[in-house]
Length: 315
Image (cartoon, rainbow, N blue to C red; front, side):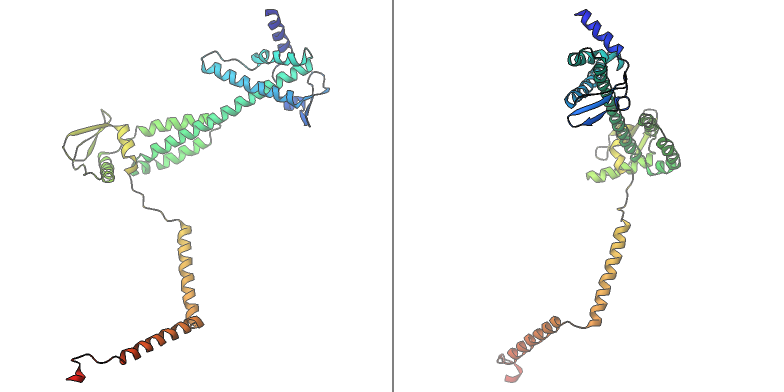
């Protein structure tokens, strides 16, 4: 058994290192077969699409295997060192025909590499999105005066961050920026205003004595409005709670809504003018005549009624 494994390993290493099969092999899919040009002798060969797909599946499994080893704390293993793991299956299919064995191994290794890069890219993008959401949350928790003071600096920082080459570098920059902004604290006056807005939202009385910040303890403190007990809360928790109430933004009206309202008012006015210039329509004339006829009929009916007792005619 040991000799067999050593033979497989030796053969796998002898067939060369991982290479990009699309570039080196000129792979083409023709019906149910896959043709390729061997890097060993520059001749054309073919395998079934099923075998090609199997090699790619080996690559996906290989990436999963390496990821699990990393999660379990094992030392990293290079893809070239993993060739022996694929060589056994390749030799079961092709024996010791080096052209086919090498192609099978290279397809699996290249697939594993692509899968690793895809997952790495997805992970980096997700980490970047999470970091940007957290940064936005921290920024929203700053007071209006703090944001005004930091606006110019923030614009310069965003320019530098956007110029970063990779998502990982951007994540590092964002995390550092978050740490800097989280050390910013509200003044006592700003904390008091935000606290009372929170109390309004809860339908509770204002903190009339105000809120003050204790820099040494990094806490915000106040006396409860009901029992007048001293209350204290860590700054991070306090800012999370009052963050949405630091400033009130008036509802914005989109320019398109304004343009639509102006155009609609102009249309209604134009219709009124056109209607006045054209005079009443046939339907309006008929309706007016009908109303006049009803009024005349009502008046005749009233005149035909006998006078009431005590009226002027009987005195």
